[in-house]
Length: 281
Image (cartoon, rainbow, N blue to C red; front, top):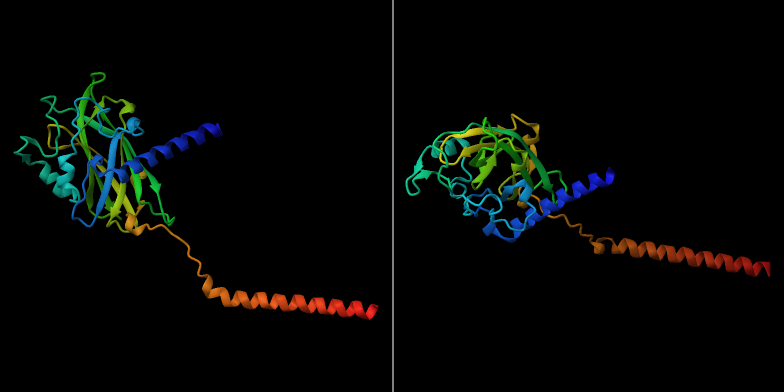
């Protein structure tokens, strides 16, 4: 039992390390590009079951899901939730479809959705101060339908709230497919906070959209689960690697004095012993 648990934990750690490695190696596969905003982060996302794959183009998700980076993510990242919700109601005339949608709607009616569960996992804390620069958010979105195995194309906006403050968009996913109430379509977003996120506790909120419609179809946040509440986070510029430097020069005088004293005591001991030996003879 202990060996099984150890292997499961090891596999989770390997998964996170691979995802983080992909984040650092190639910005092209992140679905997110740097902006002039002082608060920046990088994320890689996909179905949780596929996150170990070396192919991050998302072609393993579903054949008809677009592989282009989310236009919504590029346009809206860093905005607060009120601004995002307002802009989501505006049609992107150049695309003739809702802002951020990568595919056209597959139905002319609105499905009913819920987010069954959501949780976060802390990944890396370089300076070991208890605040992490990287973390993952995993959620399971479901379609509430009497039709078994019904599918829908959706996307999600993920927000952070610093110590109960405004919700700020840090990542908007590409489109992905969910199937009924299947538990195998959990979606995971692994994020590395690059700069501008001060050492603080952050809450997470997830807004789910169906492709082809402008309104939020399901929301899940720290109000629904403590596992999305008060995450101890900081960006990498607040999380430097700690290297202990010992200045030997400051102590060299004291060390030399101590060595000299030990030498004198040793020599004195030898002289006393020699005198005692002479007297006995």
